[in-house]
Length: 133
Image 1: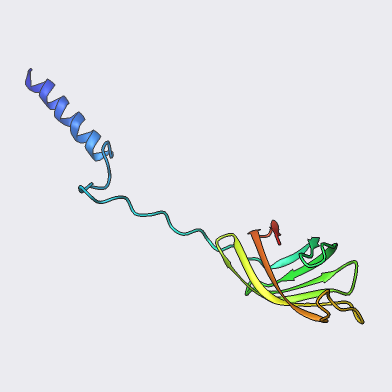
Image 2 (image 1 turned 90 degrees about the vertical axis):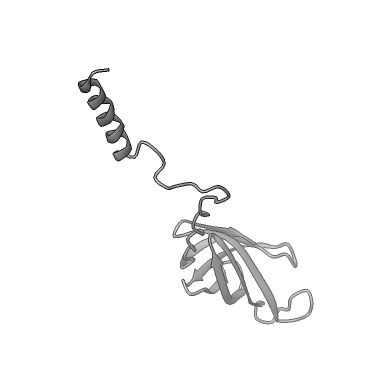
């Protein structure tokens, strides 16, 4: 091979290496790539409208839900005087919370109480949707 051919071969190899032709991170036996970053916590804040079905009496009602990004929530039934309020937390898209449910005036829940503990679980897509129980 002549000098010119060797020079072209060397320059080609150098350009391919300089352009990232190979792996950008050295690999060491036994080391794996770093894990992906955790999912971004979705902000649950917003004004929501939809249906909610009680696990206790299997009644489905329309609700307006007001949620704050700090986790506070209040659900108000459009069909009765039932309200729910409490505090939630969001990890990724998963929202969980606890609170209290207040029955209609003069009405008691099936367990004869006017106020009962409640839980909420949902999948939240920030400013788009909330689906859960």
